[in-house]
Image (cartoon, rainbow, N blue to C red; front, side, top):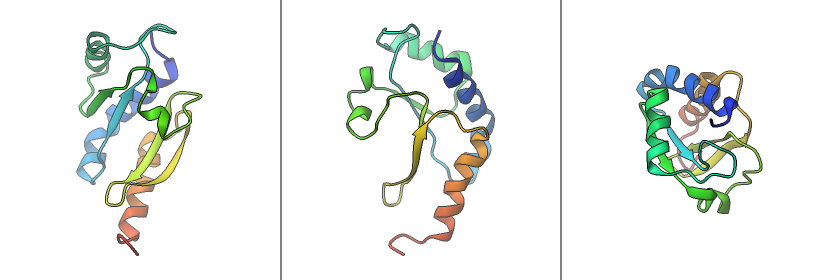
Length: 119
């Protein structure tokens, strides 16, 4: 049932979500595949994923990475991106779960805090 690394990263993000949101982070998770290899995700198993992890942030469905695949190389999951939502600039991106999910997101919050838009 889904990638164990994705599951562990989701649990770490859920644990950090309230503090990150309070500090200005906007969290978004995109589900690209279903619970079994080669299976497309649907609303029901995505709802099961959200409930199983008690996810308090937005989760969207992108079947087969039709949208995400046009802007990112998704050869491996989980894939993470940090975006400055003021400018939509991609600050960092890569495959694999960071060892410190909270620290990874906070690195972007710190960068945004020290770089005014257009500066």
